[in-house]
Image (cartoon, rainbow, N blue to C red; front, top):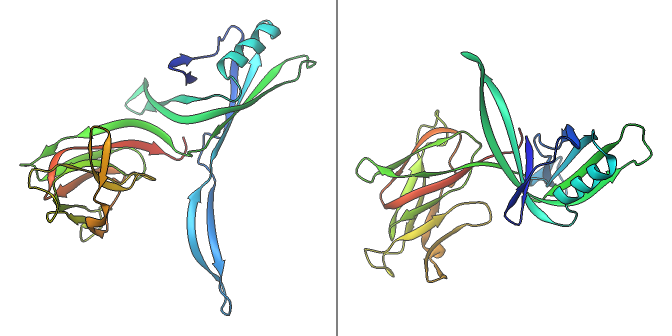
Length: 260
């Protein structure tokens, strides 16, 4: 199922007018590798890797009155407007063949255009949505501290993703990024020289949001300069214990996928 949320309203196409018959762009987004050529030796240096924006194209078959169907699609996917695309897929359980388990994913999208062929005998429409963020997002999970405030136990069904955590003025968080890791990777900080022992900071390792800060009355004070070690910043797929010496509250992350 595909629907779109716009201005707080969730919209789905009336299937008596138009039926979804195809969707492109919901698989993994293209990944670009930037390289820099060496001047005097063979090969190149890898400068960076990034996922491109997501272009989603939805094809609808017009099954009702063509004029009404066109107006319905114009209303749902109003060009030049931003909203949230909701995609619901189903997977079948091997132990219960007819038990369907849904997973809802979202992506921010801008409706770019809608095209019709008004003279075709069997009319179809194509909706083009542009998603600047290539990720498809699932559930936001909030994890409480366990074992006398020494760890958060995270279950991530998606790909590696950043997180936010409530922490004290100094300490570390650490985890094994894979089950085969022989040691735990750490992220450490120490702001004890400028903060009191009861201070509670937010550690944020999400893409584009990196920070260590205190926010009060809408004013954010950064302490990112007090981070001393950067070895760990994502919750990876599977079940992982994130150990800490400075946990003060909740750890939060949102599952994400590059495609479905």
